[in-house]
Image (tube, rainbow, N blue to C red; front, side, top):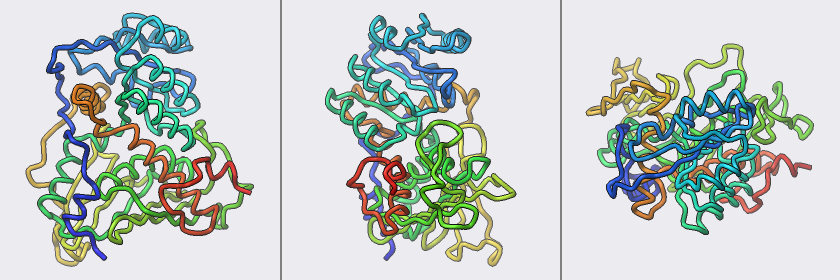
Length: 396
């Protein structure tokens, strides 16, 4: 069964506010915000320059940056124009009493403790993805934020771009590709192809799947190692501590509302990354493609207005989205997270969840865990998952 536009809109509705622009914005009530940055130059540093995420706001003062590595602390504090630098993030939170906190390390080892400490101090914030390496940790993080009414966003910078937001409008409101029939996503398939690709970069694909089709209802998966079914003996740690992984080829199918299917694949191959990393939304009248690797922080989005999905057959070309916003970064390091921070501060003022919320980060992480859950049980895994522990930690 295909998903008609009304059902599609209901399944994939955004939170109340739209993503704001990349431009520097001051708060409507002229409030000044005290911000702190938590990083660790020896544990994943600052994913996608998270220490610069407040740089485009003229109403945010970066009052502190914490990094246990002396050289990294000095250089990142200087780049962030932080007023004070600390070796211990707990001391920083105690002394600076921030309104906002950015949790920057790519490694997920301490994401839970960072966020819980920030929440204890009543701070809102933004966190690098993936939000955690275990779904139970992500649940605890969401619970801590919700218990105090705190607003936390996740650095899903690709979804935040005006181009992807415009693509959803064209698909949902204008029906540019007709009825949505299926979603197809692939990992980056670089040296991390397989399990690590699933965790690090698959989370972006799953965030986009949820943006366009809502939360999935189930998952099925097939995982192999060197062409043979993966076993618990194949479970190992990735190159960066992000939780247990398995597989050099992963294929997963998700079931969304009204019978729409979403496919995700990542395979270690001799040609490695070929620019396939992204998501295709296939409809009865054509295809919209989102490719992540176009330019730093900015995806490429095109439409094929051909119901056969085969442009060679009818000589119909891929084309840019009609009336697409023309936004180019002057400095991607500073600007890529600006729309997320703008929306975060608006969410604080309007007392709503951010459009790219911690809850979204938890739910996208759940999709990665569902892949392993389905494979370990050898059967379809219903979502949401009942057992919130890591499937590979309890395998066997």
